[in-house]
Length: 197
Image (cartoon, rainbow, N blue to C red; front, side, top):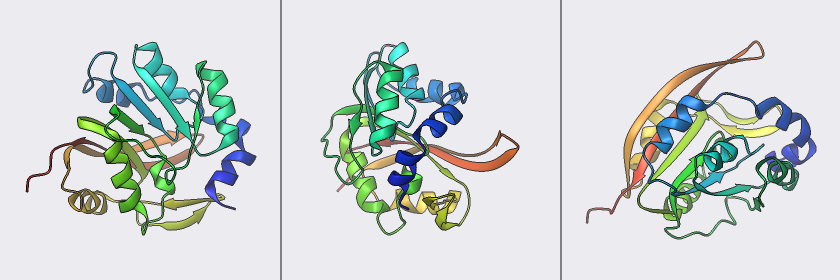
């Protein structure tokens, strides 16, 4: 089963499990770097939990998810349409002040991440900011019915170093306890810059 199909089949359960997770600290750190009422792409928005926060703070939010079922649930939750697009299908050019990719790019295989990452960065305005998070580790493959590519600090920095149009703002490992399930995560914030030639 591919990851999109997993979310289509388990949309309601996933919604209930994730819609109330407290991301306040990360959301505030991210939005502090954005212009007031700026434009945000919630990339792989899932339940719409974070889109809902951004909307409440006055941002112009575009929510997007590859799972049609998740899009339906999220659009009800946030009161606006959600784009049903995969990473491959997205095609924005310097549109957003910020992109929030919380636990979404972790489903991109390692041999495709550079191509997708380039698309994501291209979607940002110059000086726009991207938040991204992954499970921490070396694993790549299927887990719990979905495809995962985990990262360590070193491998995430290596990914960033291959793209000369971004600047690393912060990178942090953290432990998340949820339902007796402790998982280490790694998240980072990068800014799109004009590459120096």
